[in-house]
Amino acid sequence: GGELQEVIEGHKISLKRRCEDVTEGTHEAGSGTLLNKIYTELYITEGQSEEVDTQHEVRQLERTSKKNIQDTPIKCQDIFKVLSEQQRHIRVVLTNGVAGVGKTFSVQKFSLDWAEGLENQDISLVLPLSCRELNLIRDEQHSLLSLLHVFHPTLQKIRAEDLTVWKLLFIFDGLDESRFSLGFNKHQVISDVTQVSSVGVLLVNLIQGNLLPSALIWITSRPAAAYQIPPSCVDRITEVRGFTDSQKEEYFRRRFSDEDLSKRIISHIKASRSLHIMCLIPVFCWITAIVLEDMMTRDQRGELPQTLTDLYSHFLRVQIKRKKQKYGGEQRPEELTEADKELLLKLGRLAFEHLEKGNIMFYSEDLKQCGLDVSECRRCTQEFVQRSSKERV
Image (cartoon, rainbow, N blue to C red; front, side, top):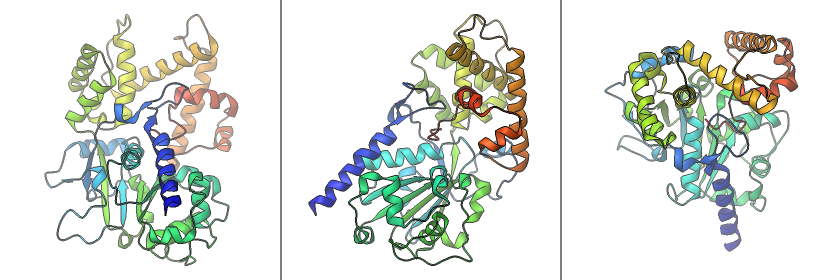
């Protein structure tokens, strides 16, 4: 009826607002930009790499950069479309990709295109749910209906029977960040959208088709965490591979209005094999852009970074300088104090120890164990970590 159509339109407006304004790397006030202005198409393929990589993600990139002739490219907006006669109905899609490769941006672009009426208009409601945010209620009990009310307040008027007749798409972004267990072999079976359970149990029942069997499910994850979902439950696997060589260049041209600067940056990256390989990853392109812009637009006599270590060292210096200018107002913000060095060593220890353990998220107790002051880190992480609280890159 008309009232339900109003709810859908209200949801589209809300989703458009949520997805159209993004921040690359940082979420300082006023630093947002329109997704459609900076979005560069990503290279996405159907199927999975021959082996699941459990080694450090950086080491996977050289293999990834050698594009397989048999790769089947697929556009983000087509992941639920049947593309060949052999394929059956696509209900559950799993998208893999290393950190920073653009999985969340893909989710945002898909959602924005739907909300603006451009793509996938056969879907009644697109419902993005961040696993990082779902962690906040992992100890609570919810029905699927109440879960939607919590994370999409514009849907308060939706009734249980509406969910069973509409074509819905649930997007679970960042499965690797989830802290709720998925017990596919032993779990409570739920088929009613008003039945209460844990987040993990609801997700398993959605994937298996016990709950809303006609609903589409899209899950994004780093490769090492994707094993949690049995292959028999997945109709299509895709992999976000990052940027092709031409897409890398397009990224830098979009990033800088100064054509001469973008040409110089592209030229430098092409000359360095390791930087060129790493620029497969959009977030690495962003780091590279920050460092090279800083070095090329001021009186920089030093040599431009050729290696990853060089680049990260310069990136850290740029971020420290920004932090000091923002919070300290010091005369020589580029100089490291003893307190800076001590903080960096503690952050390094935190990163190294958790890399060894395979953890990708830090919590306040982890910081304390490394002797870090939580309130100080909260202020610094905007500059050091440069990851948006909304996982924008």
